[in-house]
Image: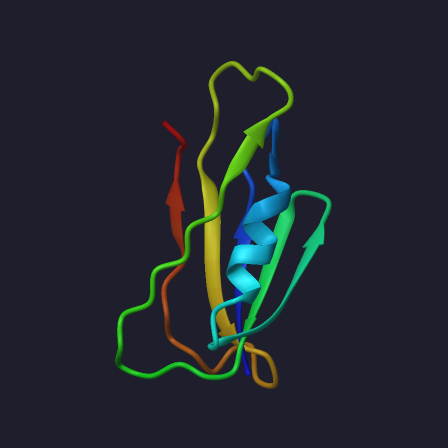
Length: 91
C-alpha cells in the first residue's frame, strides 16, 4: 500500500465533495483527513501517471501564504520509496 500525504495550505480545508470523488477511483483504497493533512491510501503504484485533484475551500484569509508539501511513501516501509516531496502554493 502507498500513501500520498498532502499538507493543506494554511487557511484552507478540503471541500466535502473532493473526498468522495477521490474514493471513486479504483486505485484509491481510502482517504483520511486529519487537521490540515489529507492522506490518500493507494493499492499500489506503477509506472502509469496518476493525477489527483483536491478541491479546497478557503476559510481564513492568510497573508504571505507558504507552500504546502506532498509526500509519497510505502505504508509498510516509509523510507523505502525514493520519491521526492513536492510543494506548491495555491493560485
